[in-house]
Amino acid sequence: MKKIYALLIALLAFGYTAQAQMFSVTFQVDMQNETVGDTVSVAGNFQAAGGVGNDWTPGAAVLTDGNNDDIYELTVMLPAGNYEYKFLNGAAWGTDEGVPGACATNGNRGLSVSGNTTIPVDCFGACGPCATSVDTVMVTFQVDMSNETAADSVTVAGDWQGDAVGQGWSDWTPGISVLTDGNNDDIYELTVMLPEGTYQYKYINGVAWGLDESVPTACNVNNNRELVVSGPGPIVVPVNCFAGCGVCVPPLPPINVTFRVDMSNEIVNVNGLNVAGSFQNPAWDKDALDMLDGNGDDIYEHTESIVPGEYQFKFFNGGSMDPNDGEFGSIDPGSCAISNGLGGFNRVLDIKGMTNDTILPVFEFNTCQTVATSIVDAQLDGVEAYPNPFSTNATVRLNGYDGMPYSIRLVNVVGQKVWEQNEVTEAEMVIERAGLQTGVYFLEVEKNGAKKTLKLIVE
Image 1: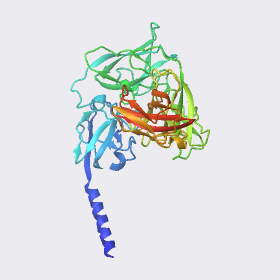
Image 2: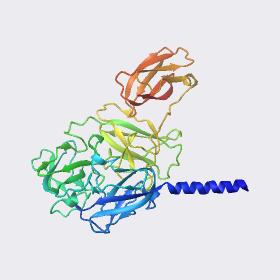
Image 3: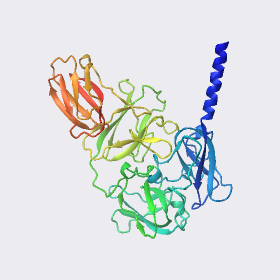
Image 4: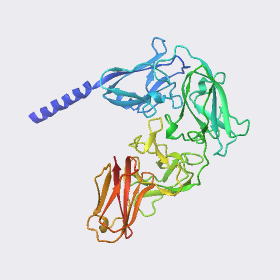
């Protein structure tokens, strides 16, 4: 009985401690430069912990303006930790702010909670307070379509559309803000009047989502392009190639890219397993590219011919009739993926400048973990590499080596071969750091048709 009482006391103490670790957090946003709709809300990965809906659910965590000063507020109780969020001038995605890169964390706002916190008032879609006076500036958008087969309408959409003077547009609406090419030079343009502020946008080769560009990471803010409008103007946005950063260069011939994913920890949906991304036309077609497991090893593959460039993609366990089929969980930005701005992430396929076919590493579904899938026989069981990680050089050793020749190569995370040595007849081989960049590589040793793959890290 004493043990039972002791356990109850411990549980009560634990509950009290957990309760004591909840802190008051007040979100604030200044909406004075916006035409406010029926709802101002905030969405982020704090919502479930704060009891205001599921994480990243728009419209559930509503802010109010009790004194009509255009400052909308919401107070919740949160445990200590780091969170991300963004404000919405509405209750649905598409009304969310574009967070400027200067104050963005993975395309969102960042928050660290270690005590009672009142977040400083930021202007909606801006870093810091709203400007006391706002000029209206002439802005010209430009996009180079010389590498594309231009549709009947080339358009641009963003969170600036509702602010365009005299247009009556809604933010993030494709097909209504049309660019034209008056002199047939493949540069499409649109001029509008915009209030000063920071905006996000992307070009669309057509009039619907799915035809929009995938903005490369080098000029990507929250998966979009960013525009800072500051008077007096006029402002002419520099010409960027559609889906590129800077001027267009002639595209390279397509190469074959083999996507691979390990489903050994998943139940494959009856509607199949697919890969989809911005490399498709139309983009993100979840029903087009089936992945198959030809040898029953739970590694599913699909090979597609793709023009070299930078793209985004995901694996989908199911088809378009399965709304929750896409990867989401432990794919971390900065590892093998980037934020999609909505609390999720897309994988990155960077094949810029490549001229040879490539086979991508095998990723575990829903993670950035890679899997070694090659056949290994007894002769290669003793392969080791040390030190690992290494900064200057690493030694590869075949313990129990029998003198038969073997080959060894180093492959980066997108499948490019960066170092190779064939017909090796020594038990040890030294790999020099030389021009290898910091990161993760795959060391492949082949002998008599058998293959061993090790992960090798360069510091």
